[in-house]
Every structure is written in structure tokens, then in C-alpha cells.
Length: 282
Image 1: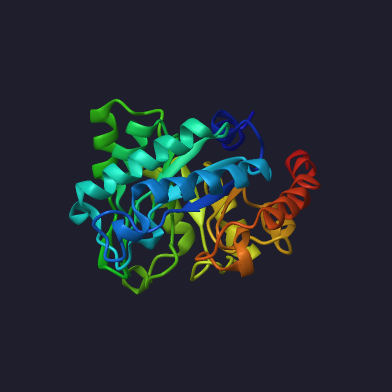
Image 2: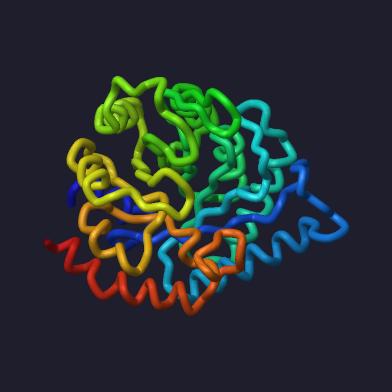
């Protein structure tokens, strides 16, 4: 079994896993948090219901993230209240679900993600900028791989894997424009990224097949599509990718702000299940 298949089989138990997103409503400390209208009890209840719909509709994993906490803080400026809330909801989701769960803390909140993942028993965290740097919504966002690798080792949490973006969406990468995305992917792999995430330019926008193929050919770790996978492009992109995170497409009207649409998820998973074994065996 090759390294790409082995890593994903260890976590998900299937080839080319599809990870459904749980977009948490505004958490304590964020500008839109309103305990009188939507406190932690309600936030958790919504997350559990969406997790149930996604799992019942056939996804292979779940990723919990604080997408509604914008405008985002970054790195060490992310509050302890955010990590605590993420941990609480992720633990509830992980306990209720029979599929693996991961964590993502905006923006590039690797330490908060890892702390929450350890407390909740999650299997991976997503890191937007593992190496190099880009201009994000929060300004200059630099690679945190060195810090995170040491933090994980310090906490004895090697079982939690790093799923790391390269040339991530929602930002400008002009500051390293003299390096190709393939070189950046190699940088991430060589410095410890255990899965590589490839995206389009924005949430809901897919990378083209050529970009996914180039990533898959230049690294030995799994390549995960991080945005824009749909029923229409899934066969083309999963031909080269080893799995995908799907958020917007699983929501009503393809809008991440809307509730999860179980029928939409089921139809998508039926389509993926119809071809992914063949792609894996090819």
C-alpha cells in the first residue's frame, strides 16, 4: 500500500474520502456572538444536527471550524475562549459521530486547532499556511509549521495529523511569486505536512484539474481538494486528488451560510461512490 493510501485509510478507512464541513455559528468572543440569541447550547445543537445529516448522507469524515468568527484574528492573538469553544463542540460532534473528525481555526490558528483537537479526540487539523507566507484578510500570514511541529511533540500528540494548504484561497501570494506552486508544495511536504490541500481562489471555487494533477505529481503525501468540489467536477478532480473537503456544495443553494441539505449531500455521495473505487484501482 502506498503512503498516500495508507495515511487516508488509517484515518478514514476508505479511499478518496469526502470530508463534510460543520461551519460553527459565531463563537464566544467573536463580534457576531450573541448568547441571548444563539449561545453555546444552540451552537452545539446545530452542529450536532448538521453532523448527523452529513454522516447519514454518506460522508467519510467531518471538519469543525469557526468560519462565522470573522473578521478573524490570527495566530497567538486568537483567544483562549475560541479554542475552548471549538474543543467543546468538536468533542460533542466526535462523541456523537461514527466517522473521524478534524478541526480548523481561522485564521491559521494552528495552536488553537491543535489544543482543541487534543481535548476533543480529533484526528487532524487544517493549517492554512504551514510554510512560506501570504497576505490574508488579517495581513501578513506566515508559516507556522516549525512552531506547530514542536507544540505537537511537546503535547505528545503525534496521532493528530497536519492537513496543510499550499497557495491557499482568500489571499495574495505575490510575495513569493518567484516560486511555483509545485515548489511551495514541496516546501510544505519536506517540512512535515502530512496532507496537502489544494484550493481555488475563493470558498466554493475549485482548482482546475491541471493544478490538482501538478500537486499530486510533485508530492508523496495525500493531496486533498479544499474548495469547489461539486457533483459535476468530482470525477475529473478526484482522478488526481486523494480526497476532498466539501462545504459550500453541501449547503442549500451552494451557499456556506445556509443549512446543510441532506438530499444534496446524498446525491453527491452516490455520484462519488459510483466511480471512486474505479479511480483508486486505475
